[in-house]
Image (cartoon, rainbow, N blue to C red; front, side, top):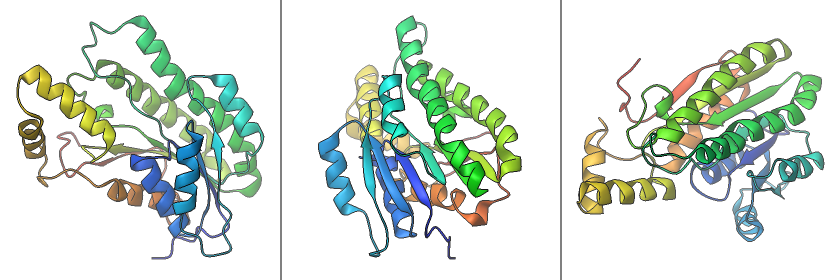
Length: 258
């Protein structure tokens, strides 16, 4: 299937590792011009050098810290002509929702809602002028089923999902879609951190906790970042023009809800 991403400009947030990096690679492989966005410039340069390039593509990067709204606004102001926006950033710290401080909620809201809003408001005018836009938010299966021990994340991820659903309805008439991809257990540094915390609380080894978590998945394994990136890339394409406002789990069948 040709996804026809040639001459499409894509901005991929959190693209120096994990699902974000895999998505940037997949979009570039399909012919898109990719702009990486993250806070570590040295790592951005390394990933930029790894991006597939047919010779006609133009890849670059932007440096921004999502904890600082003005920093994000400044970064995006230099280049906001994108057909594709991938909103993706690291999840809030794990832990009990009761024990979470108010600041943890406000910090997560800043990084997952405020920054998303800034980026969308920046890129949508160009998308409208092109009659083509794809906005995809990388969230979590906690949108469908809250995950124990991820209290702040459960709260904020659902806020993003509702923000997205509302926005999808407002932008659809302009040829712009907005969808959410919900990764399950994916083999990333974020999952390694969760396993470490869970193992410590359960007084077991990380190897045993990994085995236990894989047992919760019908596929009996964790996802590769590239598998989630494939779903994101399809939603970014012309082929997905009539898919709008959905939550798509990529979780090996682990989520029990429909």
